[in-house]
Amino acid sequence: MVGMSDKKTWPDTIHAGECEQHEPLVRRVLAPNPSPYTFTGTQTWIVGAGADVAVIDPGPTGSGMSIGDPPDANGRGHVDAILRAVEGQRVAAILCTHTHRDHSPAAAPLSKAAGAPIVGCAPLALLDDGPRADSAFDPDYAPDRVLADGERIAGDGWTLEAVATPGHTSNHLCFALVETGALFTGDHVMAWSTSVVSPPDGDMSAYMASLSKLYDRGDRVYYPAHGPAVTKPRQLVRGMLGHRKQRERQILRELEKGTAEIPIMVSHMYKGLDPRLTGAAGRSVLAHLIDLKARGLVRVRNEAWELT
Image (tube, rainbow, N blue to C red):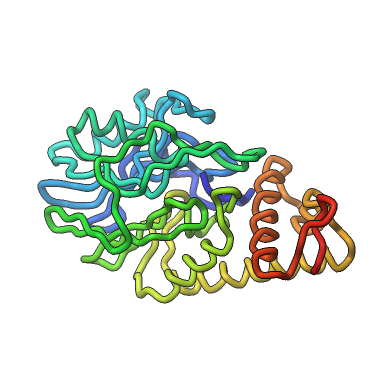
C-alpha cells in the first residue's frame, strides 16, 4: 500500500491479469487488488525481452492479505498471470521494493513456481501503534539476497541498480534500469497520490531526503507500483517536495491557533477527504509532527502538541 487519494482518473480499460507492454524492456501485469489506498491495484513490472527477465513487486496473495487476491478476468490468480506473461523466458530474479503486503507476499509462490531467487529490500516485520493507514508488513518475506544502495543485478540485455529510498518504509528501494533511464519507484513516488508516511517505521525526514535524492538523479521515466507512469519525474518530485512543505506550514498554523489534536488538524487540512482515508492523513500529520519535533520546532506537553 501506499497512497492516499480519492482520484479516479486512470482509464477503465486496464484489467487485472493482462500483460501490457510499456517499452521494449518493460511490461506490466496489474494485480486484482484495487482500493482507496492502492488505486487500480499493485503493478508488477517485468524487465527484459531476452532469455531471462526480472520481476519487480510480485504483489499480493490471497493468504493473509486483508484486501485478498481474487481471480483475474480469466479466473486465475496474480502469480499465474505473471507466469503467463513470462512464458518461454526464465525468471532470473524476483525483486521487492518493500514488504507491505500488497507488494511482497507473492514472491514466495512465484519463486517456487519459477525457481527464481528473491532479491531486493531487507526483511522488515513491525507492529505499529496504529490505527494502520496501509497494509501491514509481510512477516514471511525471506530474501535470498539483500541489495545495498548502488548494488546491481543483471540479465540478458538489462541491468537493475538498487536506489535506497527510505521514508515510506525504512527498507524501501527503487530500482533503476541502467540501459533506458527508467526508475521503478515502488510506493515512494506516484502520480496519482502522495505516499503515506506512517510512524514508527515511516519517517518524514528520511522521506524528504529520499525525494531530494531522486530529484538530483537524471531518470527519464518513473514506473510506480500504483498508477500511471511519470513522464516528467523531476517536475513531479519538485511538486511533491513543495506539497510536503505546504503541509508542514499548515500544521504550524494549526498549532499557532491552538489546535493540539491530530484528528482536528486533519479535519481542517484535508477538506473533502474520503472518510476512509482520514486514518492515513492522520498518520502523515503525525510523521510531520515527529519531524518538526526533531528539528526543535514543536514539542509535546501534557500529551498535546504545541509550538516550542
